[in-house]
Amino acid sequence: MSLVTFAKIAWTIGVLAWFLIRLPFQIKARKTGVADARRKNAREMILLSISTCGLGLVPALYVTTGFPAALSYAPSPALATLGVMVFLSALWLFWRTHKALGRQWSVSLELRESHKLITSGVYEHVRHPMYSAFFLWALAQALLLPNLVAGFSGFVGFGILFFLRVGEEEAMMREAFGAEYDAYCARTKRVVPFLY
Ligand code: SAH
Image: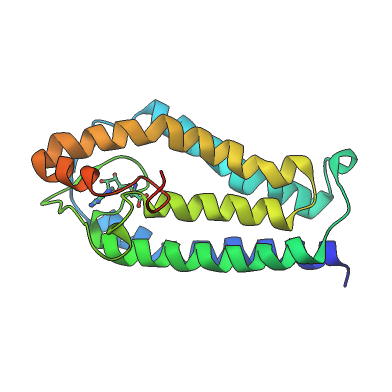
């Protein structure tokens, strides 16, 4: 098996594992009452679609057809190995964030009935560890897929969602939790512990 084929299979397994981790939470979320969905709007849906293109559709097109072949470069065993390790750490963190959020989790910006603010476990040092996991996924994609478009589309797609959503999300949480959320923000960073 060529290195590129190996890396493509690794990326595919990573994405499938991501779906399997999320599935039970997605099913539970459907049964959980929503208290506030004012921010679940067309803008949100567009941002989610852009992210899905960058982390899913664009690399899937490359994995299945090699498109755009002109922008491929020589693969490196060291980068591919690192890519597998980064994807594994993204999946671990992704699973831990779902476990910690439990019924508070939602794909779009919503508040659940009797929503609780989670501040422990992987939420202790950063307030958006699930987004950290998505950035790790984007990094793994760039390390695994030796193609300029397919490799970097994850950063572009998820980056757009993150930067246009995070302020809205924090405003929603501040409105719901007030001083408790301000104190939480004061002692945490957004996605990288102690840095950002
Ligand atoms: N931004 C977080 C959560 C993403 S899921 C992260 O990256 O880990 C998005 C939903 O999670 C939001 O609609 C919000 O209702 C909920 N949420 C975000 N941070 C939370 C927290 N600290 N405690 C409880 N719910 C939270």
